[in-house]
Structures are given as structure tokens and as C-alpha cells.
Image (tube, rainbow, N blue to C red; front, side, top):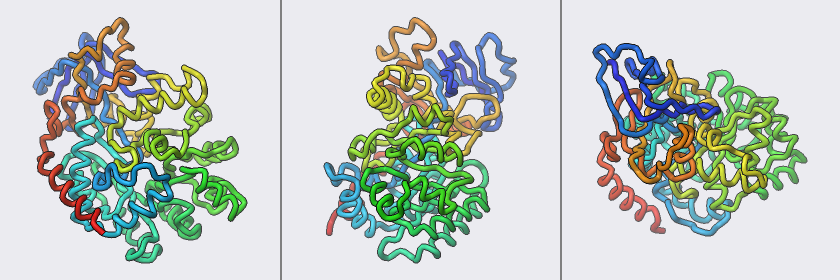
Length: 432
């Protein structure tokens, strides 16, 4: 199948913030074959022409999500992380069924697609049902099967064996990839973390865990072991391979040097960290060391949204506020953290940019709005995307060339029916 997309402009999703005005994107069998100015485009031939009146951007990549937690959105307001988890979230999660997870993930996936997020890294229960949900919506996901010692769950060694077996049976077509998701060093025994890391390296899997999200978490580990969380993970052979560490708020220079040495990628979740008062991750210091960083929403119970474009703006604001520098994170870098840099952080060079050879995950943002005026220079298009809150103007989304959102409506599932189902299931889970 051949498609030609024409647009007012294309935002490539690279670190430089490249914007191509009056642009063409050619797609063959779900992959991008050519991107550039319309004046230089090769003949269209028999391609289906899709003309969009706005800007085309890459499908956004959400590097850290617990999307089925739409079931708990807005609950436990005002609690710090530890109490939020232990007093409200974990007790309600103990009552979850696999059907709850699939329904919630389907609704959340549709919500993300409407906001331009085409790929998410999910760490949540019932991973096969998460995969089934994104299969319904047409999105992509990296599903890090969680390892967590909660009541009623199998022993951790059994959880790990099952997760590795599941990862071996993934579809292999770029839609769903399974990884390993040991929760954190403060919840998982170090020998289990070491075994999970060894299995991830052996099979080339993504190892995804929470690191240094709160002051209390890191202080407790330091008091017990005499090492910071990154140093503890390094000492127990957890680092190396495809490691994606979520949050990384409380890292000092020594920790950052370990991250650089072991090429650990970071999922930066500014909205969740701000809402739970966890702190502000040192993103500028990470980028200056060459550490791979991508943006994540975290779960919709701690954000409380799945709007990654909103988090792009917040990431830039917090980086500037925390450093006292208006150049601490440029608009181009902030957008890159949700596109090309995010794809790099999760080890998926096939995603995140509108460039030849990448998968055709495209998002049309309608620029026929005052939000996109004035545009004096072509770079202003990217500036408006970042600073003016453009997610409400996402009109169409394609994943691998297949349209999954048309004129702001998800085409693959009934979003209104899902909303009602989530409300009903959430009410049942809230009852004690």
C-alpha cells in the first residue's frame, strides 16, 4: 500500500527541532519511504493522497505508563506516594480482575491515540490483556510485566519465570513487545532484581523499574545498604543491557555518572512528580552527560492525565524553573523528549521521528486555530506546539499508515461505551 501525506509543515521530531514547510511524507506498507518539501518530492504514482490542512508530527512515545489506572483517576488526592500506594491504590488493585485491566487499557489507549500518543511503555498487571487492548485500538505498546510481592500474587521467582516465557511469545511485528518490570529496589529483593536483569540481558528485553522517585525511598535504601539506589543497582549487577529507569528525581552527580557509564535510559514524568510532590528530575544534567531521556505520563491516577503534549510543556517549564535558566530546556528539546528521544530511550529506533525507514506513526495537529498564530518563522510552528497546549487540536492519528483517529474520534473502538464501562468498574473497585 502506498500513501502520500501532504501538510502545511512536518515536525520531524529530532533534537534540532527540524520543521519542513509545505511538506510531503510518503508511506509504503506502513513505513516512511520519503520526507521533504513538496517541491522536491518524487512522483506520487498510484499512491493514495491524504491532504491535511495542519502540521504532521511523529506519533508520541510515552516512556512510562500504568494506563489501566484510569480506574483510579482522581482518587487518593493529596497523599504522598508511599501512603497513596499502600492506603488506597494497592488495596484496590488487589480486587482487580483481568477483565477490568483490559477494559481500562482499551479506554486509556483510545484516550492516548486521541492525544497523539501512538506508543506507550506499560507496567501493569495482566500483561496479555494489555496487549489485547492495544490490539483492539491499533496502538503500540512495550508491556513490561510487573514483578511485585503483593498478597495473592505468586512468588517472585515464579512471576519472573512467567514473564520471561511471555516475552518469548511476543508477535514480533512492532506492535507489542514484552519486557520485564520489577517494581523498584525498595519493594523487590536485590537477588530477584539481579535475576531479572540477567534474564533481560540474555533475551534482549527491556528492563523497566522505578528509581529514586522520592527522598524517603532513596534515604531508606541508603540507610540500610550504605549506597544510593543507582550505586546499589550497579553493585548487584542490575545495570547493563536495555535498562529504563522511571523518575530518577533524586540523583546526585555520582549517580548520574553511573547512569552514563551503564547507558541507563530515564523515563521523566514531570506531571506525576509534581502532583505527588516528589521533586524535579535533573533533566538538563542528564542530557548534558549524554544520558538518554524520554517523557512519560506515569499512571492516570497520579498525573491525572495521559496527555503527553501537556507534559512536554511542563517538562520545559520545570527544567527552566529548577535551574533558573530560560534556556535549560528548549522547545525543540522538549518536543524531542516525547518523540525521537523517547524512542531512543526505549530502544526503538523504528519509532519517534518522521524519517525514511521509520514506521508511519503520524499525527495531524490542526493549525487552523488562533493558537497557531502568528507564525513569522517556520520554527514558530514547533514553539506553538510546545507552549500553547496543542493536544486539543489533534485531529487524526495513523499507526503504521492505518488511521485510528479521524476528526478527533477513535475509529477502532467505541470510546463512549468504554467510558461508561470504566465508570462502572471503578465504582465496584472503590467499594470495600
